[in-house]
Image (cartoon, rainbow, N blue to C red; front, top):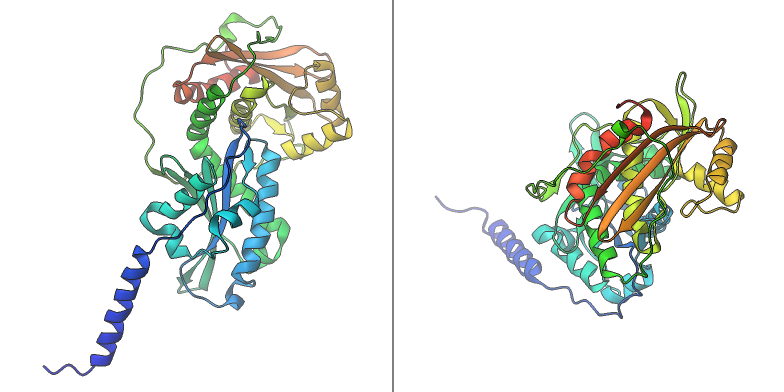
Length: 391
């Protein structure tokens, strides 16, 4: 049969050839001096627009505006958490040399380019904020926002996705709330990977040896959660996506029948504060899941501490911690420490009544490098001990 569409075939073949050439192209990256050493996890933030060439009107803002707004918003959000050192935008621009990144360049080969950029920036993780579109027979087009965190060294990816309605995209508070919810879902999946990375990084940093100041309490010995002999388990799957998981939104509103609780960041020596902050976030997550307390948000706690000219980490005096708890109308507080004894990490925490100063719950556990998965698996029981649910 005679071919009646030779021009179309030639055009398609030409496009395929150009695509193959493009996908083989390399993006040249410049080098920059290494940053000052820190135990915080260094993160490279990259907003990206999905692969389909819809017009700016579909999104409500151009790609350039999207990058600028999200770079500022995500950088501010991550800095407040305290775990991360965000790579400054000028360093990203210097490494890229003014090149504008396209989705297909970033996503191909398992986000290889994102990892290469991260390595050039001396980062441990890439934090991708992707906006994408998907056709829907009923609603026409759905707009999605996806957070992807990539371990620069191993390439493991952790992600969460949500629909963003046009009204959400135009409202900065709603955008922040969606990003926060997605981050907490990603954190639930990536926490072991981050803890392992933070422990390795802390161990590399030289530190002046000091004996940890442990918490003084008279706990019930049965409530003490001790570390069993670690069991080596298989590694995480390369891609983890939380499915059907409840968002970890910590409410600042009182719920009938629930005590209002403040959870302070675990105190720790300077070199181990990032490890302590990760463990604190996991502990908050586990306490939240018990559904027995109204948790004061970390943002509200920081605001009160700033007003009282106190620091959330290093809040040694329990009387000050109780005072700040009263300022937040809390009934109880949880304080704790992460100390080092030789090469062993020792985590201790207790729950205190702000009126009587009585210790209501106490728990402890310990681990060494390589036991991160094991200690995380014990934190649910530790949270129950603190809550008085486990004898």
